[in-house]
Image (cartoon, rainbow, N blue to C red; front, top):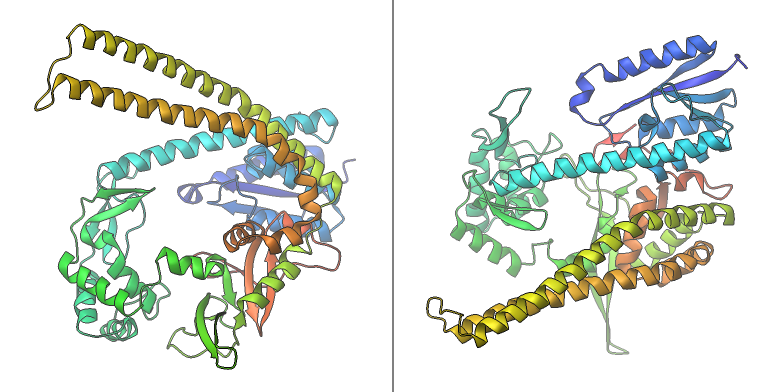
Length: 526
């Protein structure tokens, strides 16, 4: 029993923690435990994810562990200090645990010896996974509340765009970050609307800025799209949008409203703007992590062309997806484009079809959904009870108001007569009642429809490809973003990388791509 080879895993959630010794401390605890058991750590057997939340299962360290466990049959366990290091959240924990069990590997939590591979131990592990996930949600809720409060005070809670910079006016222990003008880059930004109104294109402006020494996101030439976004970003006018709400900003504006308004109007007339809902709906597959095979870090874009057929007097519009065809010195890419219809067929064949969900796994996921529904049911009942109580209060308030009206106790307010005051108050209460009844009805419908929706889950798993092809484009894209890590276009053929856990549900003969993952900042990861 003591002759066991193991791997170790450590994780911290935030970037700030990466500068501490937290992972090293975890490793010390893991190594001490392994030594006490007479086990040994495999060569290069320590894996880490630093600055990554445990609620996501798409972590390089975890993926590398799963790959190694699949290839190296001598590995028997993954040692962590606590179960929340491997995953926060019941579903994430269960997926990782079940994937490891396929390879005969168990999770050993040093400070939680009750979590083992027995039925009782697995049950405790699932409970701890749920608790860890709940605590993670509470932490995120607190963080978002703090960011919301910061936005309400007029300070942008995120990273400053070009022309501005983040400045900490507090201390390292209690940081207080605000936005200030970056005088090194602000002069470049201020020229952009004026140049565009003089007749320069986005490409021309990008070239001029590069000639003056401005560096873009990739330490190269600023792209035409970056130029366009500066013109259409209200941040430069002293406002910002945060979580669906617009706020008046404390940072000084860099651009003048009239000049920006003129530039935006000119851009729309020329069809240069690409952020409208109409164009986003027209090219939905641009929202995917979709890249050129040759250029690697350049995204796939789209355009439409119309063709008229005189013989039948028909005009047909075709949509093509292709490389943005620009990088560094704006050299052209030779990769051919793919039309939308062929793209959808390949997505069905190479993304959806290879995923094989057997009945046992589908039933397992169904049971998890059922458990989550049962957990939320009590909260929904309490919410429904609160709605009923408020509806009763509204009835009493309206009754009291009627009695006051009959008794002549309602006084005029401003230019409003007592009758107008009464009607306005009644209108507000009726509007509140209508919203509460609508919310209550939605809760009841969700409760009644859940079983019906869940009962169709197994069928949907077995018929996923047909369901995908029949779905609307927006639903296709939403589904694809959940199950793919990257898509690459290579000579009109898709090269697909599936996200975990779907990468471990592929039919035999289907293998994940060896291409590098690409982060949202377009920098490849090895």
